[in-house]
Image 1: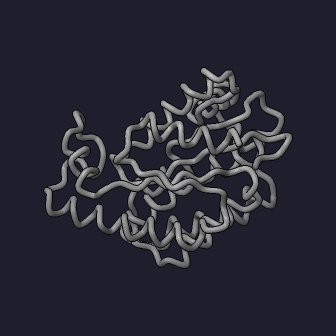
Image 2: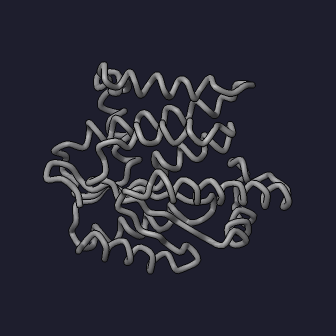
Length: 230
């Protein structure tokens, strides 16, 4: 998989507290130990912002206006307005630009994304309860032309385990952290349904790996490495 002039993008998606970031860090360590040129998406975004705070304006053209229109449609579709929507919309669009325009001829062979476009779409859909057709169409537009370049990591975990992990978090900054157990259980089950639906439909044609996040992170990282080293 992958193209000669672009790196492989490894994008994780899964329930909150499932361990996406932990496995992504383990994977980066393995890749660098194997002397594979790898970087995480956060460092790439920081570099772009440091070089030019408004870099995305320079790289937006007429074709991208269609994407922007669809994202704005999502932004205003449901009421009352919620500020969190803006963050997810911005994440989707910036990642779309990076994936399609900023990774050509870079010095990296692999980019690791622990919170990518798929995760942002699910978070946005969960927040606003948009219709299935709305978020599926947007996801397809954002991921268009990335079938050879993108490796989707579907992270699955026993919902009880992810609820326990959320309960053990030290901070209370995320939306799930302050929920009662009953509310948390209900919301986790909603997301399980959404992920299953998305994975079985819109992501079926992508290269992907199904990970059991109840396993040790090191084992899951090796599973990914073995796949991309074939």
